[in-house]
Image (cartoon, rainbow, N blue to C red; front, side):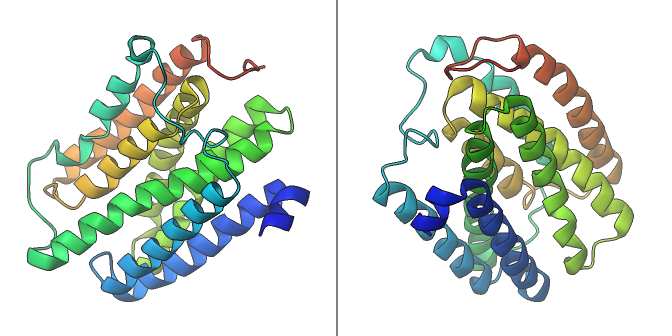
Length: 239
């Protein structure tokens, strides 16, 4: 993996994404979010990512070195975290109970970590290194959204999947720009894990769900325009 990373970093990132989508999509479709198989697979992916990053001293590159130093400058994390609670705007109604709920919640937290690392970490940083900032932001966001097409394997309808893809693309732009502007992926991991884990606790109110999707698309548009005007911590500006 190290040799592939050094020679073809973008291909390295794409390989991680393909493996994740195929393996986790298959496991999720056959066993569900609450399965021990899902949790084990995510633990393996997480351990592999952490081991690679630590072995090659890439914590700073991938935004895992810590929080931005001046937190007052990064109050824009707050709107992102507020929006991340959208799955419980329609009340509480856990999808599972007991140990199954615990396993599913832990799995969703790990999904947040793994997906942020492969999309905002590996893929985005690889393309950013090619001096194509805007392209890197767009590809990271859109690829993240399209990756949710694997939910068709879980029996989800085509219309629901398309709307989820648009929802995920909107979030992809938010997360990518926050990561780029702050130089830290940690706030994005928190937000992503909140979205996925809270989805297990929200009531199934179709109207509120559609409102949340619509609000996310609108907020993402305004939010990203605003974020684009903020000076970032990276050496190069968006161009």
